[in-house]
Image 1 (cartoon, helix red, strand yellow):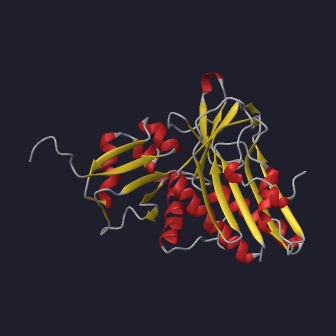
Image 2 (spheres, rainbow over the protein chains, first blue to last red):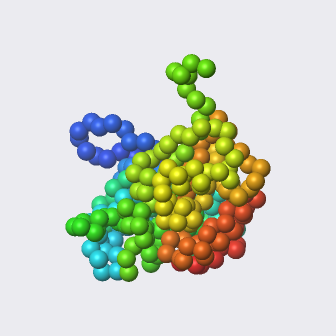
Image 3 (spheres, rainbow over the protein chains, first blue to last red):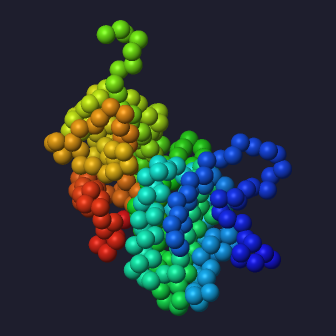
Length: 186
Length: 122
């Protein structure tokens, strides 16, 4: 197991596929103890945890949001996320600053995956560190909720079959808009 | 003026439901354009888009949220405009969504994130 100091930075995470491929766009913005990113690559929980680790922090909370195989019982074959990257990064870093200040976090890192995300893979990782666990729990939850509510990232659920895809508010339980732009039935 | 010269324009980006409606990721339109004309121009190009999409959307100009009813604001040559569909607010009746979006937009224009006041309206 690599020590935290040797863990790869998120910017360098690569799929371990052997075939060379065009590098996917990767967007990242960071400042002291804050890092936010959007990537088409597979997300790596260990490296995001390593980013927030600190001798001052007694707690790290890591949230991993994974893609679900159904919406209200309807089978979902895969999900696709699209974004306005420069705007989304601004929103995410603003959320990170606010949450870090409000909960006196030691560090915070948020990364959202873009493009097609197969079922049961991670679409978002949020890691926060704090001196004590209560602040880390609360800060992590608030960062997630804010990110889902405000970051300019949209989720398309592909149902397969004739129904096609639905642009879903990137939030549990909200109704969506059909891919053709019409309102979703029911 | 020779016809070959590119006309001054701005670029507009569509995301999610907006891109689905226009069936393309972006357009260019002549600039300058008063921001209050934007939705009308889009409606002429894409009939029905106002009710189906724009009513619940926010708008950014050069990454900053703007109020499309702000009479003095003008989109300039070279600006990047974007139609931003709701994230956490799809599914509300459109009038309510619009009011909510406008409120959030106003907060954003003031440079706040509105964290403490965030409402659970999903």
